[in-house]
Amino acid sequence: MEALNAIMGRRSIRNYTGEKIPDGNIKVLLEAAMNAPSAHNNKPWHFIVVDEREALDKIPEYHPYSKMLEQASHAIVILGDTQVQDTDFWIHDCAAATQNMLLAAHAMGYGAVWLGVHPSEALIKGTKDLFEIPDNVTPLGIVSLGVTTVVKPPRENYDEDRVHKNKW
Ligand SMILES: Cc1cc2nc3c(=O)[nH]c(=O)nc-3n(C[C@H](O)[C@H](O)[C@H](O)COP(=O)(O)O)c2cc1C
Image 1: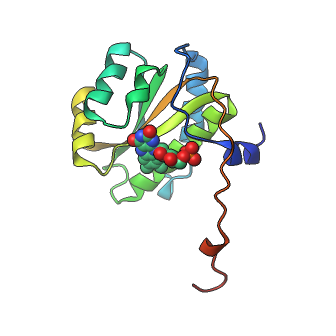
Image 2: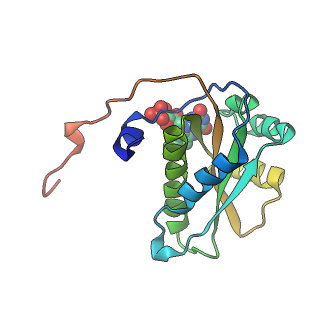
């Protein structure tokens, strides 16, 4: 799929068949994530690949908008090491990595949705406790992934009113 088609056609997909995404394709998603731009090229990101049913089912116990994980093949937690990127740039870097992962998943025909964690203290704590994450690492979000038959129409979000020319 061409890059522009992937960007324009990506949608949040929350229904999955339950079929497993092969490990090799999960690696492609991680490669896409790690090719994101990074401030000072510090690359503070880490990823926890979750494919155990027990762990997938525990996330909705503390995250109220993650029920689709009960059907998901994988969750990938995106985390930033705040010692490696000690300004808020870790958030930007991890967000760019997350979006790259979503676009790659869409281009490969998988369903995916971004589940926000940071800056909610409760969701950060729930994620840190469940996955035994060290103090210097903060979860930005979780991507829910699965094989899907759902096809949503592209959005038409372009809004001329949001475009300012040369000054506000
Ligand atoms: C930072 C962030 C957090 C989000 N958190 C959730 C979430 O917790 N649960 C969920 O189902 N969708 C979540 N979404 C997906 C949005 O609901 C979705 O992107 C939005 O409704 C637009 O739909 P689209 O992605 O299909 O264009 C999140 C998206 C972003 C960018």
